Amino acid sequence: MASPVKTYQKEMKKFGYRATWEPNAPLEIGAVGKLHAGAFIPYTSLEKLAIPMETLSSEGEGTLEHNTEGGVKFSTKLAGKISDVAEVLGDADAGIIIEFTKENAVAFKANKTTNQQINNMAEVESAILKLYAKGKWNKDYVLVTNIIIADSTSVFISRTAGSKIELKAKGNLSPGKVDIADVDAGLTIVGDKKMETKILGAKNIVPLYKLMGVDAGFLGLGTPTMDIREVVVPEGKSALTTLEPEDDEYDLV
Image 1 (cartoon, rainbow, N blue to C red):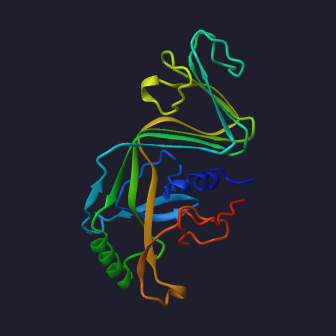
Image 2: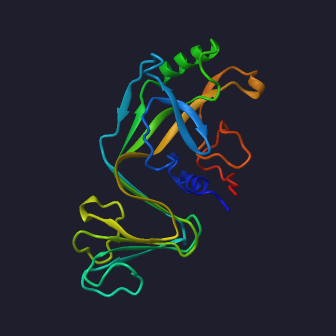
Image 3: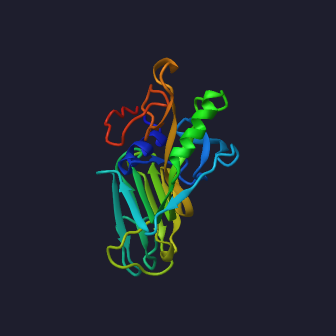
């Protein structure tokens, strides 16, 4: 049985970023830490290490959405209508029903997303490599270089096939409208069955990020450089393995 974190991060690699675990865990650009069991653990920061950091933020806003292929089914329940799949929502209620047909299936939506990145990586890299040469940079440290911030994020992960969650809207919904991160809809969880993870409308969180770390080459005998770290750690591989988003070597069991 695959763990939810590994399945979630494998699913989310399509965006070319690591998925934050837990999805609503606090995370800041310039944070320095280690990876443990799929989670980033902060130890320090560029600011605390007295390394100047400049950032650049995107001006426009985007929307990110991902649902496990063939594993997630959405139904819109309109007020005053009878639903044959709703178990908790009443006839007068409006809402969204999400049914999962696979174990660890993911339903993800992030609204009004912006990207923030370190804009002076040449200077930052030089400073980190000097610390590394002096033995003042832990070889397992990784640096958060890019983050995606979302105004509102919802993440649901099933525990088994047959998992289900029902969301009640504050008012009525438009026919066929399914936006599980819609703040204006006033969604609340009114019923769930066999769910692993339930995050509804979390505000201003960082669901996705990128990392870089020092690579000293085979057995530490090469010239140290900084590389982008993995999107997700495959079973049996080091947390420092470098993999590209398109790499399909993800045997997570």
